Amino acid sequence: MQHDKVLIIDFGSQYTQLIARRVRELNIYSEIHPYHHLPDDIDGFKAVILSGSPMSVRSDQAFHIDLDSIRGKKPLLGVCYGAQYLAHFHGGEVGASSTREYGRANLNYVHPDEPFFKGINKGSQVWMSHSDTIKKLPTGGTLLASTNDVENAAYKIEGEKTYAIQFHPEVYHSTDGKLLLQNFLIDIAEVKPDWTPNAFVEETVAHLKEQIGDDKVVLGLSGGVDSSVAAMLLHKAIGNNLYCIFVNNGLLRKNEFSQVLHQYEGMGLNVKGVDASARFMEALAGESDPEKKRKAIGRVFIEVFDDEATSIKDVTYLAQGTIYPDVIESVSATGGPSATIKSHHNVGGLPDFMKLKVVEPLKALFKDEVRRVGASMGMAPELLGRHPFPGPGLAIRILGDITPEKVAILQDVDAVFIENLKKWNLYDKVWQAGAILLPVNSVGVMGDERTYEKCVALRAVESTDGMTADWVNLPYEFLQATSNEIINKVKGVNRVVYDISSKPPATIEWE
Image 1 (cartoon, helix red, strand yellow):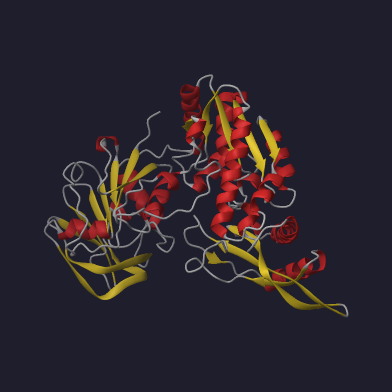
Image 2 (tube, rainbow, N blue to C red; image 1 turned 90 degrees about the vertical axis):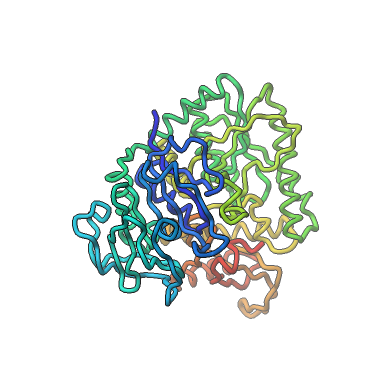
């Protein structure tokens, strides 16, 4: 089945991926392409959105695009920089704003009976983020909306389906932003909203059957959402010709290896568990440098995975749980990556000698879409709702060198923290949580004795994609109960602290 597609042209805005996700929430497929690397088949897209940008249209370095094949021929929506570009280079005028227009604002004028603003009234909150403003509308422009500080907050160009807004409908703070996108895409552009999780599963399974045929596929499972959903899609397509390998590197959460392995077998997957924890511990012995720890873990994983993969006769494909943010065009509008996304592929940097073709069934999906696809296949909510877990595991949550004793301490601390989050109904409100074992001992008192034991930090953040994150304001009562339980139950720990740093400037993990 052919789905209508929306092209999002990226001018380097930090919000571009968010536009794509909002469009997809409407069950409409969207793709992001940088303004200077447009796809050859523009005709294959039903509508086009121009993103915002950190650049000014008045700058000598302004990002330019040839709109001849788009404007007047396809429904077009300019957002922020896109709106200013359409004005400045087509008969209007853009100038520096007297005050930087950033943050919440409210519409104080909305054009009556305008389909673009159907269901959106005066007073609706929008999010501004620009230092330039449109002083004069482009040729043929009609004013559609204003705020107290921004007269030309929205406009359309008569005689064509071209619309423009100086605010960001894709961010949460624009309360009617999703409705505005719906009005433009479904009512004005007549895009069919038929790109659903069920349709994705049906079409992907059919495509995988055709692509793979009777060949064998090997997949490294991690226990995480992406590799698990990729495995289920492949299992539906090729059954037991999918060989899954789940490696225990000795740095997983407490009892995770046996629990996840049991869960996978209950899903009907052809999976082999490989306990290589001793091999990883040996490679990490005495190593404190974070980057060297990561490299040692990556190297041993490849060795273990290769040993297991080559023991399966006639394997043709390597499957990976790569998702869309990992594959968005790396040449961005600003000359570097559109967004620096730190990803831990289940099997990353595989050596050339493996000589396998790669299959990536999730490469068109964002993380939230992966979860929805998994749910549509009946996968367990506790698996789909799992917090992200770093590829190197607890190795980067133990600051300094790794020993089996330190791993055991951190596993016990982490187990108390995660179980309590679930018990207090906080787990699903947190994007990622974990404990960090600090390389310091502190003085404490237990009974009548002084102790000199380990300090652990607890970390819980809320985020959508890990690129930015805020620390979670967990209830004091929860923190008090969790701290008491850790100190009472985990031998070797006498102090618990809570990390209240956001990203940026801090990162989610400590190493």
